[in-house]
Length: 92
Length: 457
Image 1: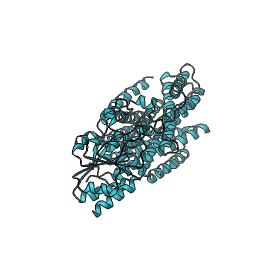
Image 2: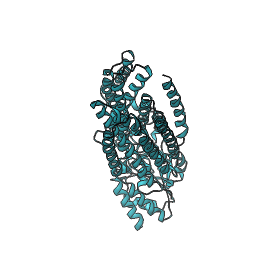
Image 3: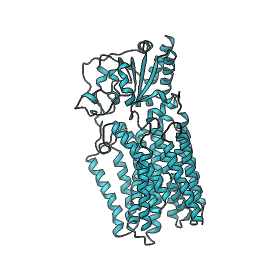
Image 4: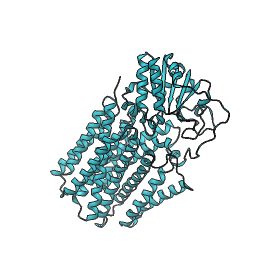
């Protein structure tokens, strides 16, 4: 229980940090910010790896393996496509 | 010992994510930021493989191989014009992964007798948000890819149904608190999936930037909720940061449309097919040659791109016109409305693809004071974002939306396929103003014809 409460503190701090970090994004970067941060939200990958590597019953293993695949699409697709976009942005 | 190393790696990964998002705020550092984010992800993933609980690698490798290959294939193959649906899909997969992890945890821990209220609540929320994000994103991607109609799909009593599915889903989240069991979570997957579909169906194409950033925010929150379930601070921090950034974008987009997130979700605009066109009003048609002539006498030219430019893939043609004009020392800029296109920053990505430097792209607030001094404004496939009714007509659904004030320019040329009204189904006063000329046809061909005449002239 106390660990979950501690997690709530981390959560609260991350909310404030998030708002501070992204208060002034230029519109040019709206799409890359979205796809790049989206790739970061693929961090669920960590949870799905633990599940796919440790579960015992078949249903759980299959669900977890699909989760790994989904998260990897999110992560690899997100970072690569963001890089492709950002490579094109240039000044005069 | 092993646990300490893993947590240390997570700590570094968290720091890398924070720096990554910070660097994504500036065009000069964004690419580095994205790279650091990827590095943080790699670190987090590799460290996780060392958990004592992780005893088998074959399933992890299978999932990672298939997912990684699919992700890379999508990212390298996608056209820049298809970026909105790509982003929507990626949001969906992230949400889906979170829901699945939540579900696996339920299957493991409920039979073990887990009954902590906070745990049951957060695992329910991770499944609810994750599943709704997945189904909602698939619908959004379908609309953006035009597999589904871009117009709002509204069923009888639609918003009551949506509210009902939300209440039902919350019920399934709360039920296990009284009596922990697996069944409610299974039902929750179904109701949350329906909720996501119902939520996005009535959202029209022009409101898509709001819904895409909202789904982005949800995908982050789903990951954060999963972090609570696994008591993994890396997930909580990274997920929350993304949730916050998506929320900020959602707010920016809503403001740019003068609408609240609530009204985007619950008040469909543009349902009526083909609004009434004013009869007997005169418009002035023009030709590419005449436009070229106007341009060559101009000192200051502003191009206003909209979704129509994306549809006809006219960004390269626009770039060629800019080059031709700049060769004649005519100042040429782009004016970008925050919600032009189908996702935040859509026009910026397209023009970057066509190699237009981003300092030629001016934001609405910065360029609006300059329109009275602009000799020619070319409106390429934009409609609602230049409709003066937003300023003047209290009865218009667009009233109050900040617009690009192109009607104040000396001459306006509207490149348009036909006289069909814009997405909101609203008549555009701009077309009938005495200083407005209409150039009908495909935007790309029109721009090419203008460029040719400018270069020859």
